[in-house]
Length: 128
Picture 1 (cartoon, rainbow, N blue to C red):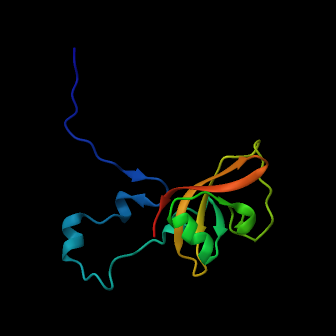
Picture 2 (cartoon, rainbow, N blue to C red):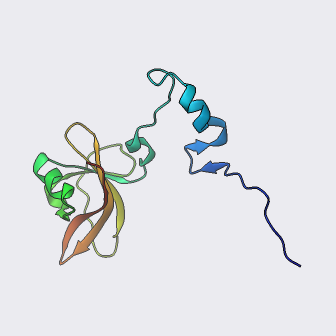
């Protein structure tokens, strides 16, 4: 005996997106775009990632997909509570991380990796 599926509905995707807070494409097309769309900041969705604050020079390297040494950036722990010096080793990496620029804009997401006793941010998605 075989079986088949006649319909499928996604009820949620992660902790932020559920059917009760979603808007259909049809309804979105009819909305006043300026005032009624509840935008969620991408950095808020990624609040469980480590945050690396990068200078404009480092941002330029990341923009070109280059891995950058973490010692050149400020690292904020995954709880976003405080800025601290975090030491990454081969034993505690890879870690998921995001990079922000001086205006707190999301630049990239990727992984913190350790190679040759140095820690690097290796971008996987760059948004600029």
